[in-house]
Amino acid sequence: MDIAGGENDAVPHVLIFPLPIQSPVNSMLKLAELLCLAGVHVTFLITKHNHQRLLHSTDDDGGVESRFDRYPGSFRFEVISDGFPEDHPRSVDDFLDVLNSLQGVAEPHLREVFLRPEKGRKVTCGIVEATFSYAFEIGSEVGVPVFAFETISPCCLGVFLCIPQLFKAGKLPLIKDLGEDQETPVDVVPGMEGLLKVRDLPRFCRTEGPQAEKSRKLFMAEIHSLRKAHGLILNSFKELEGPILPHIRTHFPNTTYMIGPVQQHLKTRLADRPPSSNSLWREDKTCIQWLDEQPDESVIYVSFGSLSTLTMAQLMEVWHGLVSSGVRFLWVLRPDILKPGGELSDQNMVTQLKKNCSQNGQIVSWAPQEQVLAHPAIGGFWTHSGWNSTLESIIAGKPMICWAQIVDQLITRRVVSEVWKIGVELEDKCDRLSIEKMVKELMRSRRQELKKSAQKFSKLARESVNNGGSSYTSLDHLINDIRRLSSIEHFENTSS
Ligand code: UDP
Image 1 (cartoon, rainbow, N blue to C red):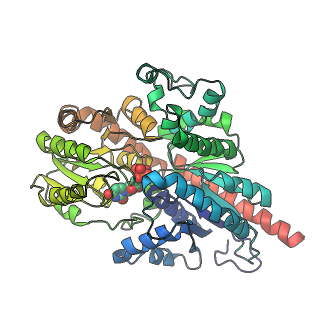
Image 2: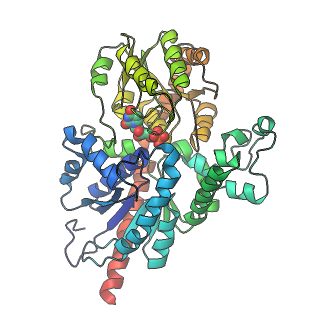
């Protein structure tokens, strides 16, 4: 395959389009690099807002763009507006509005990109975040195959695929007599009987009102249009989530590629070249020096991802719980961690907490998470059960405290604690005493048992991306299919 893409060559050229938030931007950039390594051209469609943040936060590493200079002519960003003014806060509460506004810009843009008649650079297929249902519709309309990339875990996807049935059967939304109904078992997924309750489902299954209605509409469109995807790419590995695949296939008969964890996959294929950042916030690397000075497995890493917000009261409970556990901690407090609408003095309080950390604790605004989790000083991870964080913890073999807040995190938490047994669950009630108890449980009393299971899955994750492993083979399968699609496209163009 001529990766430079001469005029007469069938050059595979993929358009990648992530959701405009940190975790999909990160995992889909890793997928982009895996494809570039295989000689596939990539155009990465990104919002102007995130592109600027990405360039700014990675400039001390030479910038994200310079990393792709290793693949001359193979990678480029294509920048579009999300339709919002640059100074808009784009808080998590605005997320659905941002998606709506982005759709207005992205729909005509995708149509134009898919039809652009550039010799040697024509887009031969798309890989888009599964949420963008309109991209599959446009792909089938203009005859460009579009793959769906799922940034949630296959176990969650398996459950989500059943939700439309539950609505159709009138079993959802379940909102009457909230307390009791929350405990109703959800036994729709074969193999997961007895595991899930209604309270593990996304909020729109348990509430009513305009916000729930908006989320439900978006969700239903995603599930409905997923069938139009040419294939489904999953960021997980068969040794962890293989059992859910037959169930997913009953809803999605096209090819499924389980190629993850993409984080580890890229690292392995780059032969452990130093990690490079895809962060939208500037990473504070001083925490690595601090970790270097701590005893092995003595520190708990605390981060609630890129979107979760806390009230000031919750934040203080976390602080007191951590301090009174006596366990060393490294805590990520993003600059926008506080729920909007709090007091002005709250932000000063956060600054004070950062300053007042003792020898036992460190607070940073954003950490190089994969590096942190891999550090020998880290003994456990208190996470919000976001899928990327969960995978990164699994790769590193670190057990977790799961404090899930929204959407897929609720199911991930349940599977982590009750199926894989690599974590403990912190109930919604998150007071200082429960926190202290959980931290001690994770880092002391249940340490050996949880660490053993976590390390078993870490080994399996690493093996899956080694030459001949399940995810390695699946990625090769995907790359071959992408090449085949470009040859078909090439053949059709040259013979017409
Ligand atoms: N992350 C990071 N530094 C931090 C906190 C998070 O690099 O200080 C990254 C983390 O490695 C992960 C992503 O942010 O890749 C969070 O994704 P996840 O799916 O866990 O949660 P979300 O942010 O989507 O809720």
